[in-house]
Length: 621
Image (cartoon, rainbow, N blue to C red; front, top):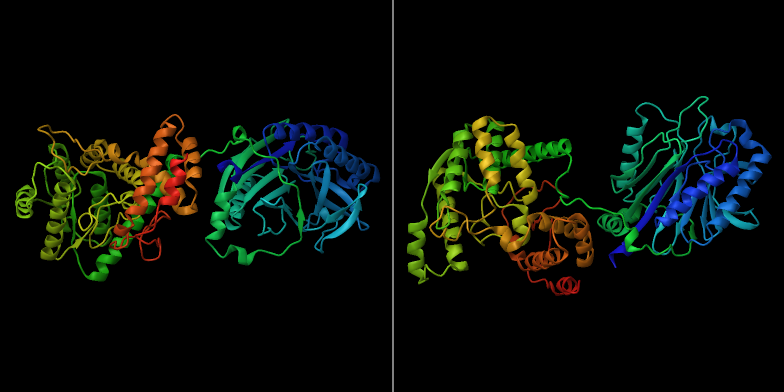
């Protein structure tokens, strides 16, 4: 079941009453019970949350320490019916010293005490830093391990930390307790630090900070609650809430483990004592709140999306400039159809020409109308070339295709794969020969999504001398074109707008006497949005078909029906496996989005690998 790979975490910042553990217990218990009702399996509360972090010198008083210990026992007793793991902060007397600790509770038991290791000069006024080995101490009528340790439920490994402590590489989930006073600009640094920690350790971080009710004599506390995973802040609360805050997120343990397997991460983990825990409560599907972006290759927010587009176009142009310089050629040649992919290749070529201080006329665009070419796309190609200053030639391939089909004895009325591929290969021959004749570098135009699905003709649009689009998925191509449109002069913008309105099509089937595209790629393959979604998670994490389907239903809820998502998943798997032979002999081209299907190290897969296991699981959905 895909839901077993999720761990539901809660970061809570209940309102405290400084130096009043009974009131702190009441607020903490209320927040914890709400989290348990929401299905939380691990819960983090703030540092010193059972008394308040602003007690000052009275934190050393026996009366307060006794009351904190009693509050902890009450919290354990009141949550004994749940196997959720709860980390709560309090001062603890042990070994003749006073420690700032996190107590880890489960099913009414105190599993361990984790003391803060790195203290500020102010904190050393009351607490002792603990950097020694784990020791069992008598506490609350039992013997409890005190020290830096990991907690293992069998399915997940967790650690508990405080601000300033050295991160623990071995844990898949880090519960981080904090009592950091707020300062202007601190929260952005906090967010960056948590995202960076979760990325570097390939883990989930559950951060609970002190807030409502703390003394404002000298400081202000905002009650920040955040949950991060693998470099991304999944959720955070509104700070400075008078009654405290709470956030929940479902951490994807399968994703984190896939990230760890791709590196030598395990070699760097520390060897720490492991305290065993009982299995966590089963997470019900109704409690899974995890959502996924339907466009994992493209940021949803405009500003990050524009920054991504600008960077990718720069990368493509820099790569192409290097190749041109290396081979000593000063002209680029490409087939310009008026569709998305060839338009992107033209835009990259234009940027490359500017980068190398070449005239735009050194970009040789060849438009080659065939049996399915419409006047609309033909005119679009002309407008594009004119708007970007490229040289445009037109070569009608229909006479050559007619002759070739006559030579091989193919009925031109049979609109089959041969009929379509004759046109694609004729275009490739024209482009290759013209590139030789003009001393130009032939640019490929096919994109990453087409390579994943094998939606290209072998030894036709499949081949070029260099393909700047090879690492760009179809969903991103559209945004790159839109980005350039927004920065373009009116003539260029009008031409690019026509491109964006054109359905994705190879235009290989006759138009049946109408100037209208009759062959739409997504009517055949399915939505490129969904295929790119499957590609991203299949490539990066190797998720099972069931997990991919589960995620897609959440990403495309209300857009595509579940049965449609399943059908497209089967198409994706069949084509991804069966079309590997086309990817085994690809031209050079830069990877720019972290997914590359180049056979030269980025993706290695035998062309005759069986898809049976994946297809069986997909069909059983």
